[in-house]
Image 1 (cartoon, rainbow, N blue to C red):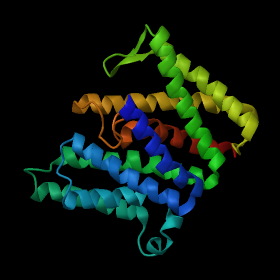
Image 2: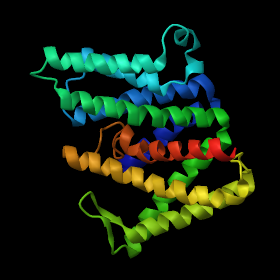
Image 3: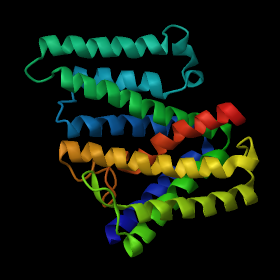
Image 4: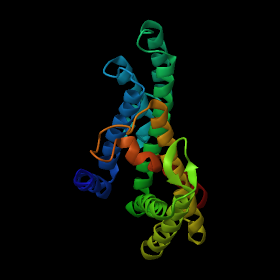
Length: 264
């Protein structure tokens, strides 16, 4: 427990200044975390990543993750979508000449991982560009969901939610997460009034965000169950890897972007 607390305090102390600064600073830290997350996925799949494979996959990830206005000079010469596709093709070519250590399954994991991680972190950057109050709404809903699910699940949990993937998660915990997220999200919107568009229906967004956050957590659990690992990595001692910490954010960032495009 002591290790968890210390690493959490250090992580918050390092991460919060980037959130406050926003702009290119926040984009930089998210790009770095995205690269680490894709490396974690490669490690879980036991892919040799310190070679052309890792370089190619990293470039493909960044092509998706970094918004165009942060790399305006590069975007004048290279289409980001084409760049990602070229990286995918190159990974497939590597399977021809390095088939003994890198096959189609490996390439597919890295391609899908780049899309999954890339767009999730890309949307977090875009959301921060919209305003720190909007990003904090997302994080508070996620944190409240995790806390509510843990507290209620630990005290009242009886009905397993997805026993083959995550034996400790329960339906009661799911409900507890939804309830606390609704309370925290509602209070935050009342006090801070972030620009979320149609404020009269934000309660629907909060519930959906809480549900998507828990779904993202289950997806990450499915990854780890498939690869036979306890944590995605050792980025934060006692807390696991980057994917363990941002699994809910990846799913909710996509949902929040949909909401913003429809109602803001």
